[in-house]
Length: 202
Image (cartoon, rainbow, N blue to C red; front, side):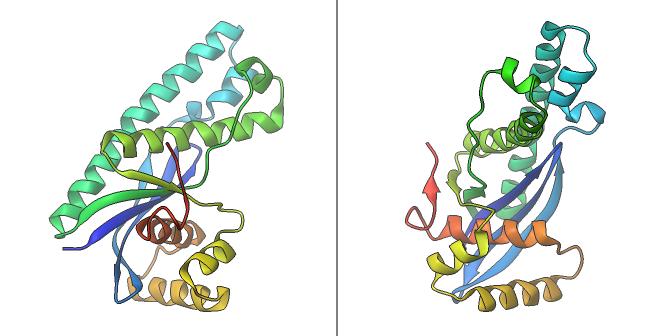
């Protein structure tokens, strides 16, 4: 039985999840899936609050509703992955995510188009982090913007060797194996090597 970490690449209303174990020093994908967190157009909650709802109070209520529903979906989704990993004979122990973003009060967010995009991303990342916490999984974060060089430094590999390894992993698994899947796999791998590999979020 091997320890497994779940790497997560959140997007607006959904996320790619790749669960990874390490065997002989290399990652092995145990599970991969797309997790829907909020399906309809209101998944762009902050945009809808700023551009569609007639009052500020209604906008805040919409954001709160989307947040609550996405948290429920994330908790159920992470629990399902943990169950699938267990059925494969492994134990889910950690989650790898991009780092949290600090946001100003909602009044300022709704008045800034760039902040709307940042807030949408943070809403769903927060839901996934909550799902991990509810399943008692250690949460590890690593910077997605410079993920390959960061991972290369942590894992003692070159960027070229990591790129080749991830490409080969995708070929062995078959489609889909997008950039999201590759980044999620790296986030999971980093989460497995412990707190020295990435910042641990409290």
